[in-house]
Structures are given as C-alpha cells and as structure tokens.
Amino acid sequence: MHWSSAIAKDIVERRKEKKHVVATGITPSGDIHVGNLREIIIADAVHSALLSMDVEARFIYVADTFDPLRRRYSFLPEEYEAHVGKPLSEIPDPDGCHSSYADHFLQPFLDSLADLGVKIEIFKADEMYKSGMYVDVIKKAISRREELSRIIEEVSGRKVTAEWTPFNPLCDACGRITSAIVKGYDMDKQEAYYECECGNKGVASFKDGGKLAWRVDWAARWKILGVTIEPFGKDHASPGGSYDTGKRISAEIYNYEAPYPIPFEHILLKRKKREGTKAKVTAMSSSLGTNIPVHEMLETIPPEILKHVISRVRPDKHIEFDPGLPLLHLIDEYEREIGEIGSGVTGKIPFRHFITLGQIARGDFSELLEVIKRSGYEVREENEEEIKEVSKKARYVENWLRKYAPPSLKFELQLALPAEEIKRLSDAQKEALMLMAQEIKEGMSLSAADWHDKIYEVASATNIDAKDVFKAIYIALLKQPSGPRAGWLLASLDTEFLKERFGAAAE
Ligand SMILES: [Zn+2]
Ligand SMILES: [Zn+2]
Image 1 (cartoon, rainbow, N blue to C red):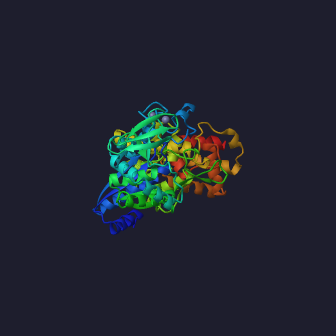
Image 2: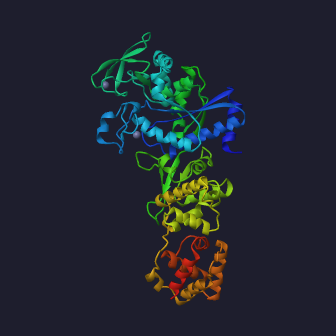
Image 3: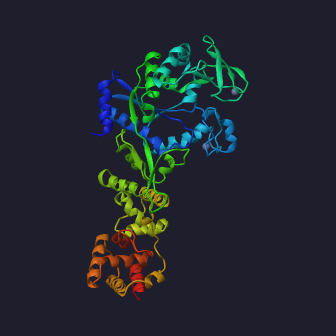
C-alpha cells in the first residue's frame, strides 16, 4: 500500500469529520524550491487517496503573503533594506514584473503546480485579512490575551513579555508590521491603538490593519478554513514547537480540533562540487543558495519525474536529492516500472538514450529527427503533436546535460578525424577499425544490438580485447576513450560517415 493510502485510512478511522480540508502553505519570500514542494506533493497524494476512498475532501494552499520580509536576502538590492518588516504583499516586485514581491515568487510556483497537475484552491493571506475573514478570530485572540500567553509559555517554555499582544498592527507611517506596540483596543469599533518604533502613533483596524502573531495565526486559520489535515516540516512538529502550541490554542481559544498532522522530513540537496570529489549533502535553503527553484527544475526534468522523486519516499524519511547521475537512475527506474515519458515515439525512446541522440545531433533539431530515425524509431514528421513531444524531451535532456550531467555522460561528436589521438592507437586497434570499415556495406542498417555483436566479432577476428576496440571507436568518433553505449552510438550515426571515419582512422 502506498504511504498516502495508509495515511488516508488512518485519518478516516481517527477523525469524526465526514468532509476534509487538506491544507498547505508556504511563505513566498524567495524562490519556492524543490524542498518546499514536498509539502504540496504529500498533501496532494493524501487528498487523492481520500478521494479514491470516496471521502469528500478539498485541497487548499495558503500563501503567507501578509508575512513580513524578515531580512534583506542576498538576492535583493540594497534599497530593499528599507522594506524589511513590511508585509510581502505590500513590497514592490524586485524585478518589476508582478504587482508585488509576494506575487513575483508565488506566480512561477503556481504555474509549476499547474505543470505538475496539482489542482489546488489558492488563498492569499493578505486578501484574507483585508476581506475581514479574520476579524472574529482577532477579537477572540485579543480578549483572551492572558490565556494565549500562558499557553505559549507552557508549551514552548518561552517567556512572553508583558507587552506582547497577539495582534501586530501594520504601521501606517513606516509600513512595517513588526515594530508597533499595541496600547489599547476598542472592540466595538474593531480597532487597535498603537505606537510604532518609527515614532508614529496610529489606529489599526482588525479588518486590514494588521495580522495575528504566527503561532496564533496558524490556529486561527484552521478554524476559519475548517482545516482537518495538514502536512508540515518536522521542525514545527518538535515537542513545544508551533504545532503543539497551535493545537492547544485551537482547542482552548477557538474550540476547534487541530488538524491531523503529517510531519515530514526535509529534502536535502546532494551535489558534487567537482568531479572526483565526494558529494556534499546540504539542507535546501534559499539564503545559502543551495536551493533549486521548482520552476527551474521543471525545465530540466518532466513534472512526473519531479513528483516521483518526492512521492516515492514516505514523509518520515528524508530525501537526498542529487540532480546528477542518481536522478538519471530514478528516471530509468520510472521509465522501466511506471510509464513512458512523452507520448508516441518520444515515449519509446528512453531518457538515457535521448542523451546520446541529442548529443549526436549537436543541438540541431532536424538532425535529431534524422538521428532518431536512423536508430530505428519511426517518426511521423507530419504529425505536429509528435514533433512537439520530441522537442519537449530534447529540451529536458539538453538542460539536464548542461546543468547536472556528470562529465562521464557528455561527449562531442567530432566532425573531423581527431588525428593526434588516432596516432596513439596501436596497430591492432587500427586494424580493428579497418575491419569495421570493411564490414559496413552500402545501404546497411544495423540495430544497436547488431552493432554490439559486430564489435565483438571484430575483436575476436583481430585477436584483441573488445575493450580496446571500443576505445578505438570512441576515440575515432568522440576524441575520448569512453562514451555512451557503443551500439546506440553507432546505430544512430550515418553508416557512410562511419565507413569513411573508420577507414580514415585506420590509415
Ligand atoms: Zn515579477
Ligand atoms: Zn512605523
């Protein structure tokens, strides 16, 4: 049973609700990266599992657009120092292409979710606050301030100051949501009176004039949106952490049962700095520059693979994500056991094979189609959909090669004979190449397996180790002693070209 079905079953057994709301949420303070995606993929899987059990369930995503900018991240220009403390929805887009800072990082992620086939209802926190959805929960939090601070102190072990209030006003002078202190309230008028660090004294409406402190906000949101299930990073799940606090606030202040928690481990990025060095494992972090934005990853691998990378691992196990060779192994596994990548002829050509074909074509699309045909696949060039699929897979392969492929998988087909390298071949190797040239007859078309056999025949006829014949072939074609599977390589090249190249190399 997939872990998502086991969790869905457990939810149905434990919870009294007949309808469920699965919630996720991410603060769009920077590029939303592959690590952040785990939460969404887990929620999506559990949501689908519930639906397949005929349980009514919604799947929502709350973007924390009303959260403040915590600090000026390294990717922000110096003048953004002035925006620290303001809500993300109220800060201009650093690149000027969206209506706000929050939207700039949120929109590419939402587009990626569409690519991933994840259907989700979007809520933006700033819009929720501005619409008045929070007014009642804010009033309740303010009127029960004492109990809230007691709960926070008891659960987290942290001292709550006498000045602490659950409501953080948005200062109408400096625009920050982090620096005003509440001095009083009028519950009927639904407003708070504050003094800000900037010297401003003002009035903040409960409707759009501020937000709840984070631990209170989370619990209040469960109540407002009727959340019954929520996955979250294991750091929130630690004893005394924000889930424990939220659970008590939810029960004692809002009279609402906290959602079924699905804590999950992080995704770690595993990468080699250089070839030959040991791969390093780091947490995915925007500020450390060790993240890969989801939209960028989706230029490199198809969405179904990215989903597979995450959903194949149970939430309580961490994932070491290595976008190099290990990712290619996962793609192999997916194509072998789950399904083809791409429709029509594209799906028939394994990703790994595409890597060879793409490099032989050297980025020329019409040549790529020729190479594919030569390798024995039938391409219907008049079929627009089929051509589109080929080009899509070719683009993934190209990007993966450029960004993540280890050098051992890269090669460059030599358009001219690499004369210097050929000189260093032994006489026996040259003889083998000559024999290869002689074996190639006009109009001949061999499969990869046939070519493979032929190399062994030639090796035994010339009485040398097959390994040395392979080496000679790679040097003659690629100017390097190793390369992709030789059968594939030879099958996808023009036989005339091969005859001429091997002949020239043998002279
Ligand atoms: Zn933008
Ligand atoms: Zn201020």
